[in-house]
Length: 324
Image (tube, rainbow, N blue to C red; front, side, top):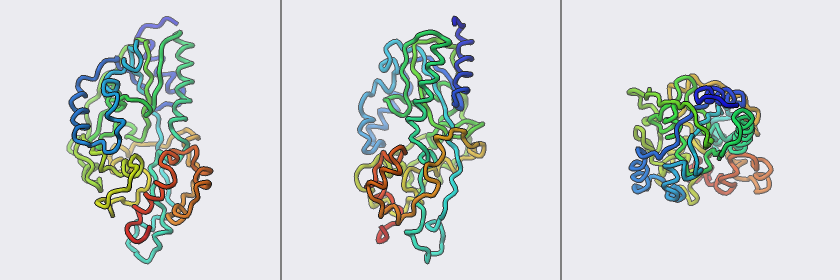
């Protein structure tokens, strides 16, 4: 179908919504010159911690045309994952110290309760690309979701899918920040979307709420972030963070929980992202879990990435000295 650029964008956005995505925006492919100094300084200061892969493919992170030679457009997709997770117990949050800490439920980030989002989103993107080909004809394409050297949040902000908040998450006025990002690089041309203005204002709730001091406004020291400590870090969690976990054993949602824009979040409609195991393990159950039990329960979950040994390390981090 030979559509004008503006009609093609409108049709693409319709197809994306019909495929289950929350939003779809498009930016012209180019080098993100404005991000170069910021990224280099962040790496030089060691804010990426042990994530040495961030040091590789520097130019690819800035220029999608190095990932797809004839790339003309970056299609940014958002997928809702919001689902209030009701804990069975929060003994670790209670002031009553007579409660058994091993009976508490270590917290897992909201996005990680369902099936691994990489699989879910890539399946949806394959369907979307096929529908695009049916409508627009053949084109060169690559799809990504948190799986390539591409500055996802920067592209999402450039495409007007939201603004980069003080917690360094992408924020939308109507939906908050509980969504995944994914990208389609292609050689199609569109009418392009435009950035939106920042709506954080004077609010600093996310910065003030971070228990490890990982946040400054619009700047994250990933090496101090609970998500990094419980997922990316392969070695022992430094003793300096003892008592600062706030109960989080895999990821952390604190800076999202306190964000006023997330009052507009609504539950997702994707069954594959529903909790795989609504009855979450207690701390004691985590510590006594075998490798076989872990594989059987979490082989299709984001938790598989960190593995049982590190999950048990994280639970001990939550429990503190003498309890793990």
